[in-house]
Image (cartoon, rainbow, N blue to C red; front, side):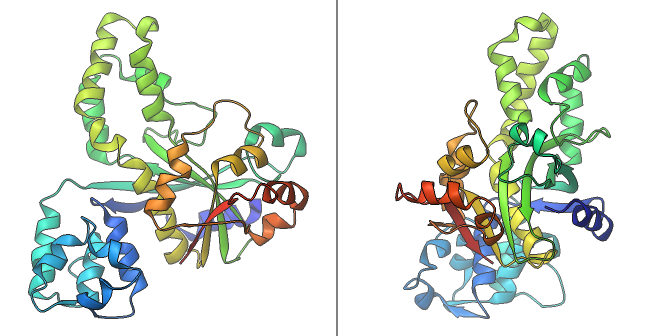
Length: 328
């Protein structure tokens, strides 16, 4: 992505953007944007949207809709929980669904922007980008509640553990805020498509690695790490991939005017980004996009097809899908 454009985005968007994640928020968000208005539940259950109607994030609203109508304003309250009580009044079913949502465990993350990589071809091989262009980075930073819980759990060795659980050369915050995960994005300035180059978290992976190989830690530090992993981390560990991908989609639609989002299939990403070892978790590039309704395809982003035509042609001959595609 053009570095000048990345700097422009940094000036256009707030430095910190609140992002609320409620359980299965992505299902309500997808259904809300798939509909133009109120819909009959009987029609939805006989449509391609039927799986979303049964998802946990939508089920309380469906159960409360006694007249068989799913109202768009109610869905919006679940899709955007931080705006649940806006200008449009909710139906009784919507109010009950929002109250049920407020009783669940949800987290208020912070989003911020950064950049990764350069245009120098000599550095391209280790940057894990699909073309010699920098990436726009969307950082998913832990809620303030996690910050407090982490430092309370590891109060005697917090700086040591944090230094071991973050990689300083990766695009994480360096101002005291802990980055849970990040997404690297590529695209053309003011274009309508974006490629998610990477979804990654060092924090959770390194915490578990330290727990499995604790020999470099003092006994007191091991106990603090175990306490954090058992009592604090579980609330976020299974959630971050869903929260991260949804944050990308929300930002692309609401802030960048993107109409199509792409994500690598595992073998395509490894080939185009020259990853030969330490491959990323397959679930981030298989079950996660499938859960969000991405479509497997042999198509490729136009801006990438022009740059890597030969490599993509060779990959297409395998007959496997090359990318996941999501139309906003």
